[in-house]
Length: 218
Ligand SMILES: C[S@@+](CC[C@H](N)C(=O)[O-])C[C@H]1O[C@@H](n2cnc3c(N)ncnc32)[C@H](O)[C@@H]1O
Image (cartoon, rainbow, N blue to C red; front, side, top):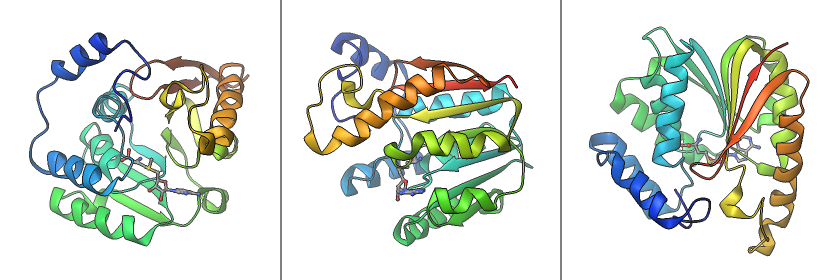
């Protein structure tokens, strides 16, 4: 969800892009409604669709997500994966987990999601598997550590995506919310780190709230 529709691109472009897709329906619409009412920060619609498209484009079979919330992005990722695909997702909030599990069972995808309870930096070192896609969407100050911890688990040719890397326009501009100073500064360092990373070819894409997108080359 966007704080401001024109935080990253011009308003007329943003409004055009919003109109381009048909409105969400069914369970996805219900999740968007729940998130808006309860102020749960789920991915923007176009970002969720981009995750689904990427999962499909690279034929992802195993995906690792850092930060699940109510499972909105998980359901989109699974829509881009075959029936034997698995999303492993890390989330510390029991309230979020309970809500997500209800949505997963109603979507009929409960058997294709493994929820790892806890904080990402505690959980990731215990993972011993290989992923095709890693999606970072939790504590912004920890993105660089997530990347470094997850890269050994990502296959060569696998994709890493991180959400919110332009952070409402603040990363490239002035910091409007003083309580987001640390997160904004961390994201500036993360973007530099990602773009110059020797194991990645990476780019920052200016849609949604800014998407970091990289492919592991070695
Ligand atoms: C932006 S939301 C995730 C949204 C979700 N990926 C989506 O697009 O639908 C961030 C989530 O990260 C969780 N979180 C907070 N600290 C975390 C940590 N240290 N490790 C993993 N997840 C964390 C929060 O509880 C929250 O549910």
